[in-house]
Amino acid sequence: MKKYILTIIALATLWSCQTDEAYERLNRDPKNPTQVRADFLFTSATVSLGDQMASPNVNLNIFRFLAQYLTATTYLDEPNYDLNNRNIPQNHWTILYRNVIFNLQDAKSIVMENAELSEGAKRARIGQIEVIEVYAWHVLVDSFGDIPYSEALDADISLPKYDDDAAIYDDLLNRLSAVVADLEAGQGFTGADVVYGGDMEAWVKFANSLRLRLAMRISDVDAAKSVSHANAAIAGGVFESNADNALIQYQSSPPNTNPLWSDLVQSGRSDYVAANTIVDVMNDLEDPRRDDYFRQNLGAGVYEGGIYGASNSFPLYTHAGDAFHDPTHPGILLDYAEVQFHMAEAAQIGGYNTPMDAKGHYEEAIRASILYWGGTEAEVTAYLAKSGVAYNGTEEQLGTQFWIAMYDNPFQGWSVWRKFDAPTLNIAEASGLPVPLRYTYPVNEQNLNVDNYNAASSAIGGDDQQTQVFWDVD
Image (cartoon, rainbow, N blue to C red; front, side, top):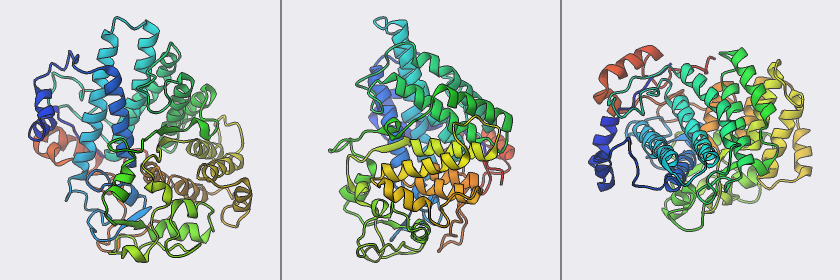
């Protein structure tokens, strides 16, 4: 277990040294956030969340390294799990708290004070904000373990305590249960909604699908609660096809492009190649998604991943696929394939009310992923018949296929690996270190919120990369 603390004073001090905008924020009354429109804050927070989930920039996160989808060519600290050289935990923490959660809290206040909105419209907008906020909170928990939660948004508390990660999950699940009624109460944000453009039925499915994700995350630690929330989410209506996917719709020109394009194309750099971990697994299975996930820069049908954690020559190894070099490539928050994999796990465990048996959901999950990436029904049929892919009911197989499908949702790929312990990931070549099970707490927390940091570190069993978050029990 791990518990890390955000201090509003610590972050504010850091920001005040960086930008005029941050300095101005120190002089604002947090209880009266009237300077910015709610729709702008909602859009900004949603895009910030999507950018953080999609970005391969090692200054911000290393999710694509943690899941071993990519590895590096020259700069080897991050694929060898040195997270503090670039202050990655601090940056991840700051983005989610400041750019996402704080902005969403301001947006909520502005919406509620808007006398021109009907009560139904207010509730619908608050519902959309709530879904994105819950998403951000759960990413923080899954990254660090215990975090500041109950006191983190209180303007009168500068050094908030850390809350137990399992208790936070309980509250997040309850919030998702309650949010559906708000989403159904009226018309929410439309033009400001970069995910669904104001389609409130789609937001209901997103809320229920996110609830299913969290419910299945805790299946190994609280079976009864997992069943209760998963069944309610499924009954309430989850994603039914790829048309329901929760995607960030990026644009063709900066600064509104997918951050992948910024690092793979606009930067002019050659820092990443496909990791041998993912390439070897997909080669063994003759996976039809290889020509979408990867470029054939070594020749037609030839894929060779760079040694994970080693210094790799860019021209000699397989590169990320053409789709990832497109500035308009959508960012994935949650998709239909993921929902089907969760239901496959639920059916495999037993006791859940799933529409199909485990085999049916497993096959539908793979089908959804292949079709999303431009594959054909013929490729789906052939792949599902392959030895090693044909359903056998093991957690190893389910986890491996789930991990493959999360290639462009790398934070979830890392979480899937932590949950299923499959597939076997490589030891980092240069450092010899195993894959981290969590981020360590930010340096600012250790230095400025000392008492709460120490209490949290003790509660989780030590502020270490190999300390497990509460749902990672194996």
